[in-house]
Length: 564
Ligand code: SF4
Image 1 (cartoon, rainbow, N blue to C red):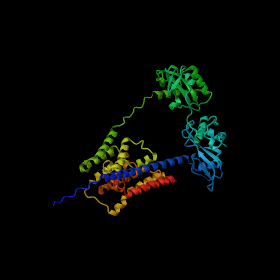
Image 2 (cartoon, rainbow, N blue to C red):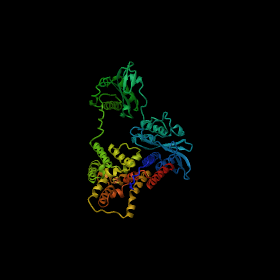
Image 3 (tube, helix red, strand yellow):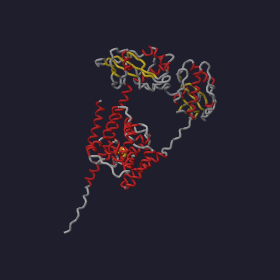
Image 4 (tube, rainbow, N blue to C red):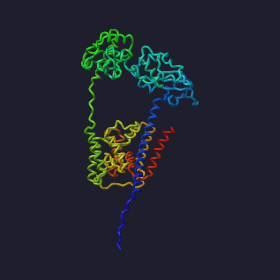
């Protein structure tokens, strides 16, 4: 009787399919948790920033509110779609409302900067008073506006619902641009659009005809006659970001070039925020004397400033228009910025190194000690000392807060994606084993001693929780909006920035020194980034206690976001 050896068990196709499905589902769950944590932090940050921008919690703002609501004891946080703050009395009862024009007014520049106004309403949302909270405009103009009570009283008695209709506001003479910007800020705060555009709308064809008499259409900057023949180019200062100020404000200057684009056909003013009669005088000079007509466009910048357009009695306005022409031409002829090559030597080397690390991590060489040591040297020299390329909590938390990974260099993005996706998808922590320079440095230092220590199991268990504790603390600080320097909690910045901040230098040096005696000491007992990557790579396809805890923590984060 022969005794046949038992054949190895081959899993049935259904069991294999189930196993793969389970693994895929767990990969999706772990990556989903990470994405959910990022999204939650982003939304919390966004809401906090919006709240900060609208909140009226300074004692100065409260003192101003008391001018009209003497029983005011506190300004509550902004509420409702219109983000207006309730004004509360000593018992916490609402007695009115208050709002500031920032952040809506921040892009509305008066003479030299934006202003922030405080608007106080009674309980029925009728304006009882408006005043200036702060201004970055020129102090002389601001002082003129502040003295003019009529300017601030113009809103009194109006309901909040009517403030978004800009209409024709009262403007303060001698500070017209500053006061109009403030009035526009009030309208913008309550929903008016386009308040930061001083010269809105398109140029009517009648105005174009003054420079190109045969003009029938204007397409972009190109002017055509009725038969579609190009007549020339029309450049507009306000659309090119040129705003040279005359006595009181900038002018919207039109500059016409002939079809070759080399000769100036004429210059006109489409609009102006400057003072009358200066603007009319300059307009007449441009129309009747045509001082720019026939001049070479490219050579214009070489002429002495203030020698082409001269208008007696309106010299400052004329100089501003001439300066606008100069700047428009400079911008028009400025060479296109030369595109940087998409990949320089550093980027190319970084991507090649990442690819090599991945190949090594998956290939048959990964078990070869010599190959691993050689690649660890490459990682320390190239990835660490030369490129300073490492992913860490500072980068993760800031990207989550911004809600974008844009702005990070391509190699760092590639490295981060490799670090996160590979362990989740394949159960291999290739980043820690091959691509982290700090891990590689510890590996090389560990090779210096044959005999190394092993911590007693109880101490090991306690210290192994440190990376998780650090991770939780860093994310909690980020959620609470505490301005903590997250880069200081890990040693990675030292590789790219050098020995600058004390704490990361201590973590850097302490971790490396410890790794001589304890294998990968910092990785095991200190690194929060490594903790996440190990979690993603651990027990592929098998639900662990960490999956439950991580899910619970992320759920708590979302619940607190919804409840608060
Ligand atoms: S555990 Fe931290 S320090 Fe260690 S290799 Fe991973 S990321 Fe680098």
